[in-house]
Length: 125
Image (cartoon, rainbow, N blue to C red; front, side, top):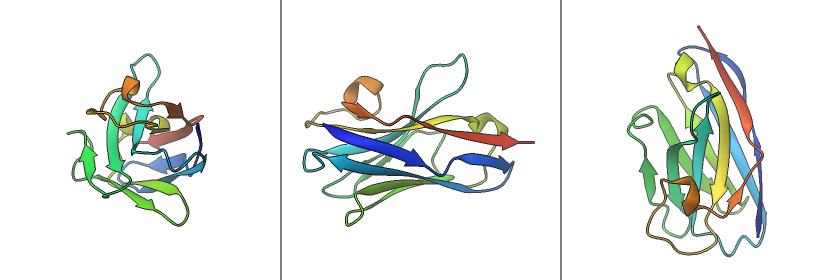
């Protein structure tokens, strides 16, 4: 099992930037893809971006393309989500997730085995 801890959330004005981090510990050798999701009140958990740990290949939801960038630091076992040009509709709890086995998908919550506790991102107008 992989333990995940998010950090870096907070309050930012619309148009601003924020970077959230996710530190992994535990059985990090079994970590195929790591992803970021978000969930706003009353809404389903939404895929944002994912990165394949071995190759660095990245995948993005349409809503994230051009504004968000996912990256990883192998030495720190940490994945980042850089968010630019933030909008009020980006307000949500942001979750980090990790796959513990190889899967064909990466965009659904059920594709992941481990989850962090989430970090709140609030974008004000």
